[in-house]
Image (tube, rainbow, N blue to C red):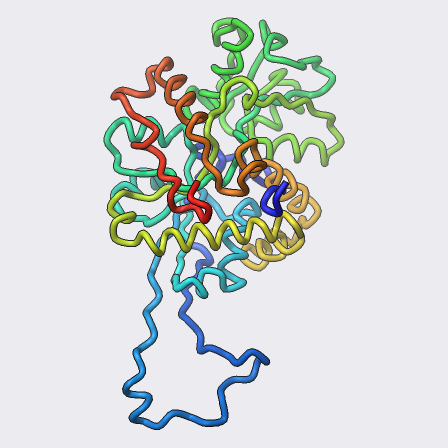
Length: 364
């Protein structure tokens, strides 16, 4: 596998929901710095004359990009924090500001060019594009679909068929976890009517731990990690082998792609570079996350475990083959067809209307 291969306390369970996704936080207002000589000294001994300086072409102003992430800052955004702090964005001619918040929709704001780039769940991007929101998914961040069904190992729920007649908790009948649960049940010839469905909000880990439900939907880098750290053995069921639902990735509005295409491509490349670095040395990503969100330092071991689980979710089959960010059009075609069966695609949409892989460093 290439060097590229290779959510946090319960409060962060909120953020992974759609589209796993976004008030202002530590951002990355950056400007280009003067070039240094190869040995690290500042400037050559012979300075240009005023006339020569006047004739020198002025340095290019950095391109401002507003980037919508999840509801609250967390360790799962380590690649963005590292790319900012290490100067990857700055050196690419970018002035990046991150935005988080509970009160706005990343997909809508990206479509309206209120945000230049956003992190959104692929199963939300497809219905949005079908409804005419002008956005494109340009890079995969979560190569594995992060929504899962988890249970205590002692419950004996080892596969989708074992959910029949069981009490299963979900935040509500919406979002990526609801879509994933329906796909998982369908694979065993079941429907939601065949389980005891409980809408429990964002209390999945507590509900399973306390026995209020036997299983629940959650996120691979959240509830199971926390429960295991608390000494509870957990079984996890993933949907990836049933239907290739697209996970969270970077989205861009069509207008922004026209106006800032080069800058967006540079942002994608810098972010994937940071993912490579963190996959190889997770401590670097953890340190960057703590620098951006100092409160994370109070539970460093927990955050390290969450980051490890997040790194694992970055890599699906396409990423193993072609590196972080890779997009598989066939998987998107299958996802569009499946979401259509759930009446979530009101108007026909093609992969080319939803995905633009040309901004990836290797073109796909």
